[in-house]
Image (cartoon, rainbow, N blue to C red; front, side, top):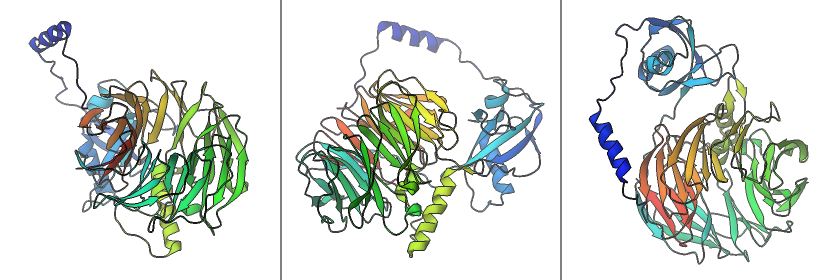
Length: 515
């Protein structure tokens, strides 16, 4: 069912008619805005682009982009940039003010700075490619016998997707022909989580039957038998990032039994068991610097070093209730490994690792330092933004949701955080300082998950109200409403190449969405 808005009340109609009668405010701008002195600084390296520049005080973002492209001599292949003002250039982590339209309206009119000051503008390249918003349901594919609990696209492209269901099976779907390919049978209870390896050679599934299973996505056959070890159901799975793998591929699983186990995918055995949480572990992530991050119902987040046999490094205490989910600023590049929008796949293993490392370093470098940020979501209605390599104190507390926060994710460019909550809204936050950006309202029931497009410009959310909604991240407005599901939508994923969105829920059908 599409979202039906209730009829407007008399009070709202009266207010709207009064507003329409009033004269529109004309934005006054001085005719001769004086020239200002600016320094241009790269966001990743922190280096200054050139000497001080004298530019008009009402220069637009597009004009600033032309200047940067000219100075970088990239006129033939122009890259779009976003700009922000560093309020105190001597402190790299001082607050930043985003320049939305031009310097006058963003900086001088609100009196953040005067035209006498030297401005330090930080420029950040945007995604060169643009993802088109999905607008229609291209297929509704039946097959599962119970609700679909998890979906994930292959890191290689949008032609393969895996889903896990309450019927005890996982299924691989051919998204080009929109047909089921393989049914992965073996689990004896609900399949709660699914995960592709970053090189797309394996799929791992975790189930309510306390086991983990490994599958070959090409044939749909199981790789060996069930991998036993956990004494309660599996809550999360994460693969070791490709640039860290040495002789064998490893992955990590978290469970309701309060433990985390690292597995060797080749011999299908437990390498290390990490215990220390006092309650169920709800989420696990394997970071690009070799750290493993776990969130738990004991209100803590723990950080383990995979290089030192799972040694516990830090315990982050801040939340006042269960920690439901966590996300890393580098999630997208670690999920996709050496696959990117150019479709140039390296041939040898060494080249593949080198490209994966290069992509990770590019995504993680902030002011010349490799920085991996972490955001945690909790039942205490808040989120915290952390930089664990620098401090065990949070950078910011993200408050505003009225009910528990169920899901968080970083945009692929690492600049925006989206949080989905049971208060029927999605909120956007600045990933650098944790400042609130906007609230995306439109859902009329709890929002379960959200996923960014590969270019970070769009966001799709899935809800109990049976709809998906696509949002414009820059404006914070609804882009497209996608009704179609017959019941709650538990899981949604946007393919890494941006072509398709896949969703699944209580109506037991996989739905694929395209432009």
